[in-house]
Length: 209
Image 1 (cartoon, helix red, strand yellow):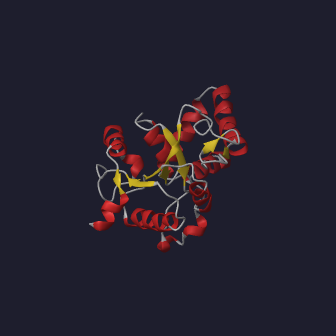
Image 2 (image 1 turned 120 degrees about the horizontal axis):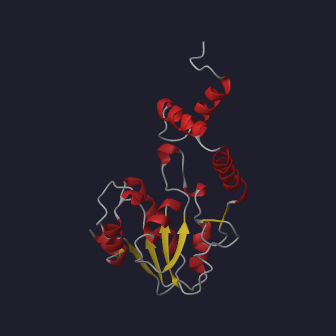
Image 3 (image 1 turned 180 degrees about the vertical axis):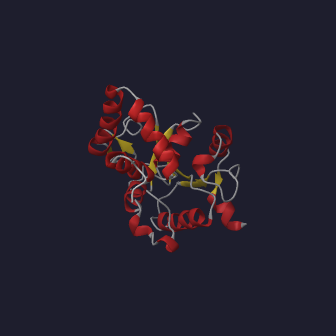
């Protein structure tokens, strides 16, 4: 027997509880808050997520979230096209942008290699990155992936793919380990992350060690 006095209330709670990190108690609190809110605000709230699902697309250059075919970062002519920062997902783009320490372009992989989770290179935006590098216009590629085993595996895989292109004068670097080993990039504070970008090191140094 349901513990809720309303089927609609129960369905709303169940929908909220499907979100990451939201349990049934938190879901109920959110639903009751919306129930007390102004109907116009609730309608705006709901319509925002409908628009999000229907209108958001991915940039055809870097795979960042965008409302147009090319995101605002890729279309910004003031940014350096010759430097590309490779990140796991959109959250990392936001984190790095918040540091105001990077003026190049991005490439969003859409994940990292994780055999345990069934994620291989074929599930990631790898080939489009390789095509960018093969064009010969990029001078530096910065690997800004999480300092985890999966992140390091992904960096090594991409490094091997790129050096096989035999494209000369490409600097391959990684962010400095101001971001602790095992940390997710999105949780690093802005100062630490900013310094990690500025103090990036050649990837070959890590291989020697």
